[in-house]
Amino acid sequence: MREAFATALARFALSDPRVLLLTGDHGYALFDEFRAKCPQQYINAGIAEQNMVGMAAGLARVGYRPFVYGLAAFIPVRTVEQIKLDIAHDDLPVVLIGDGAGFVYSHLATSHQSTEDIACTRSIPGLQVLSPSDRTEMTACMEYALASNGPIYLRIGKSDRGDVHQAPIDPLKAGQILKLRSGRSDRPGLIATGSMATTAVAVAHSLELNVWSAPVLKPLEHQPIEAAAQVSRGLVTLEEHSIYGGLGAAVAEILSEVYPVRLLRIGVQDCFSKHCGTHAYLLQEHGLDADTVLKRIVAFCDAG
Amino acid sequence: MPVDGSSSFQAARLRHTVLEMAFAGSAVHIGCAFSIIELLAVLYRSYLRYPDNNPDSPARDYLILSKGHGVMAQYACMRELGWLNDSHIYHYFSDGSELNGLSDSRVRGLEVTSGSLGHGFSVGVGIALGLQRSASDQKVYAVVGDGELNEGQIWEGALFAAHHKINNLMLIVDMNGFQAMGATDDVLSLGDLRAKLESFGFAVRVVDGHDEQAIHTTVRQLWRSDLRKPKALIAKTVKGKGVPFMEGNNRWHYTRLNEETFAEAVSALGISQESR
Picture: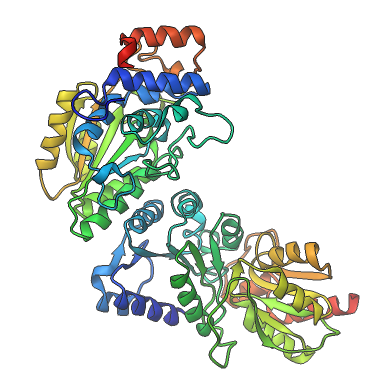
């Protein structure tokens, strides 16, 4: 999925000299192709994220199309105020990329883990939030970001979890969720984003559940969520992010207003990681591994 | 208002506009505006290029008021340019009005949304970098407060500007010696600012920030100095300059005018009714 990101970015840069990549000294090896093909459009701004985001605003104001790359713990979380004031306030076409979101940096602990970035960005006016779950969605998100001509936060989580789309998808639309598999209408439907989409598909298989992926977290429109609720019995959201302020919260906000049904939010509870370990280990610690997810969904079915 | 020739941007008249706004809106930050009056007057009169007097011209120079608290000084200059009218001045802070108490990019003529400090300079670095990449001769001036230099982001921007030899950028420090809660030397001493900026790789000049001739000459010298370096002008100023009871008195960061202090301040400017 990260390759799809880097490839799309290099393609954009080759076709448009206004496209610039700014990195906060991150992305080792990821940008080799970009640097080889468009060295003049690559700017390592140093370990100075606040200045980097402010500069991106300045570059956008004189006609450039900056893509600002960092780890999600820093872009956007460390720079929320620069994103709000310098970029979103002026509706500038800057794409902010937060890589390694969730528990990707499982061995590096709290400073590099990011389970609050969606919550931080969703409330910033005019800022759209994207969260692709595989390489197909990543390419579509990059096309969407370039075409949107406004401020975007693109979240990249654990990126080696395989594909959820087996065929090409249509260009993304604001507010849309993508059906990954059809299931029974007397059981809960799953809406997942990012790394949890593969888990959702795996779990849904044995239980014959509907599954959707949500690559566009903001804006999220009422109609697709309501439609998902209508063909399922209750909904379950899955995300490698806090249950506060992310996908689960966004779906809850919509359902409570237009179509109240039972909702189970599977995500990170109100806690930091306690231990060091692999990504798989941390998913287990936070109850986001496939076994725990399956048990919680079964219990949710039984209780409904 | 006269808008051309040497009679424009008269410091006393700019201060009078600031007083009118502050009185009309019961606004604070008068001292912050008064310390940069001469700096802005010289820039608007002699350096900033706005083709067709258009604040949105893509070919303009950029004045970034990173210390957004001084925005009334910029409003006063924008009134001289005809970008603001008397209604803006006399209805300052009225409900539903356009002009805020800090720089807001939605106002034509203001470039950044500042007041949260340290932001404007980085945006200015980005604009300057973009213009430099486009081989434009446009210039970027970023006015920061000495208190604002507490912000780490300023020094991130300074590192970047020097490393990338952004030579169309001038950092202007309004060195009035005060920040919100007291003297900069008491809150967080800046030490030898000139040496600091030089060590970061800037071409630096120090000037009396209320001597218009000196400012004019020094800005010119800076643009002609080392072509590989960003520029920094350290302007030694007096907070509240122009009205004796406000000068060097940090109360006028916060204090609002009443009828009495307004009249006294206007009188202290010593300008005749017709030149206001």
